[in-house]
Length: 225
Image (spheres, one colour):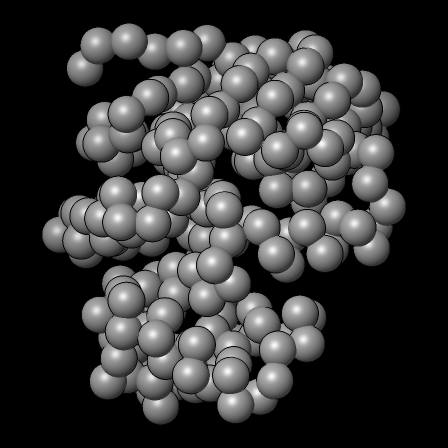
């Protein structure tokens, strides 16, 4: 699924050069559930951005199904993200003036899915995360856990091959955190999604079948509990 070869990412903060990724080489197989841990500023989010084609490396390659994302045009990257990759973020990133159903539908607009089909697919996605009866609610009328379920439905409605989640439980209490991790794990099992989960929470990370640690831009494999 993913092949990363000698991946580096540097950028400037004023006069300082930040090396967010330092020669990362890594393989993530199709259907794997991988957790990425590490300290703040260690490169977790940068790595996820590379996997999602949201940023380009300074050097090296990140290939998805044999195609180097860094070599794609902006239009090709947008199309790949629209077809293949679902994203879930810590802050949900829902549009506050749209209903839950409409928020999920937004993921289908770039793909020019007909309006009627968008609505039916969005409803099915909400049902898959246990919110089939909340489609007409605005984000402000939903709990944090429900908002994250809407965000997960929005990621899944495209039928992606990959789910990338950046601290998806970071704003949730422990009980709700466990519910969201149960949901992600269940969807991974049912749909066979390649899932990469960035988290600072070791309880969440231990639910993954494979764990990586990234610190100072370097990735190591974790073993044991």
